[in-house]
Length: 482
Image (cartoon, rainbow, N blue to C red; front, side, top):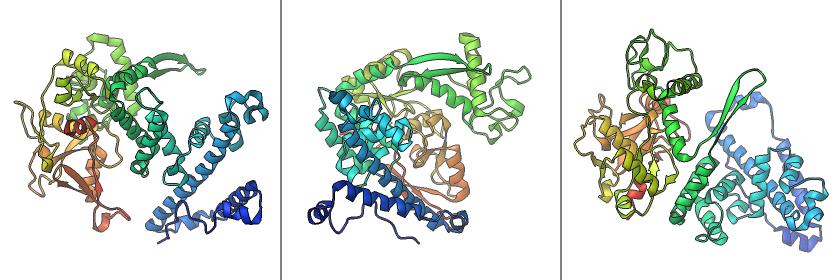
């Protein structure tokens, strides 16, 4: 087992002490340290056979150490990028460092000098210009810090720059172990919590960014570039998920397919025979064919053959008290960002509402109790309840939406005599559902919470502990707030 290397080792003497006694220029101290770091990294063995000889535990530990190397290197680039930005301030004009070296902006200077992508250079400048303690001490990476800053957004009358800095420092410990994409979602959620009244304006700002354009490639192919606002994206992604989900039947437009659109007797709704075994199209090709056919046939299309049962649309989930008081927000099913109550009310006006009652007892909070007069036994009604409660696959790190998921008995139906109750069911995508059954993963319920327990024996996973399986449904979390 390798020893864990700390992200930010504490030196025995500070740079200030060293400079004060030895009178060595600051740049020499920094340069010497960075050159030593580069030399140390250059000395790391690169023999592939050496890495292939590692055991699983050693390999995973090396991966974590390599991540520490990357974090520190990005931190150093951000430190110099922030100073470059300061010396290239717009008010300096042509006397700024970037323009004096022949570059339009500090971002361009950093990109050219480091050989990185433009997006990475911009992130380095942004983080370096607003360096926070959690970045300096190495507890969060530059990528995560930048994602948090962008997710929190710009100052507003309700939130000053100082308040956003404080929010970022509060959020950093929670996102330290996340990737940049998930950290950005957490930051957007915090912004919504801090500035709920500004939600309609942010929703409208996103809607104004929508666009659609077509282009022709030199080889005769065409392409579409479509930027969708969250509400439109929810509708289009519902169509896409239903076309590409392994739980769905094969869409086809040929005359040899029997009524119902199922090839060669493949069963509906989760049957493994519906996994497109006799269809050589990729999921992307199936999606392209279906979208084209929907456009071709328009309103007259028989969507039951293209997309399975049910109309095209998306569910909106909102706490009843928010709807009654007309204060708060709602969520499009499967989407992490909220929508305003005016959007919720518009959907309710056109589609009506279904009341889902949840248990308010702290020992069992969040478990759906009933759905009016709907049926049980993981019926459509229960799947609606699971979708509202779970928000998608609850396997840690999975992003699959509810339409890709199957209802899993945490107490197995045959092995444990498990009950088909909503509280004892959980949404898992097909991949993780199979993984749970085939590799011995267990799911344990602790009141309203679910825990993922790694397998033992031949399927044991190295360095893996029991992990929480938090809900992805922010609407449910809103409903449970006191």
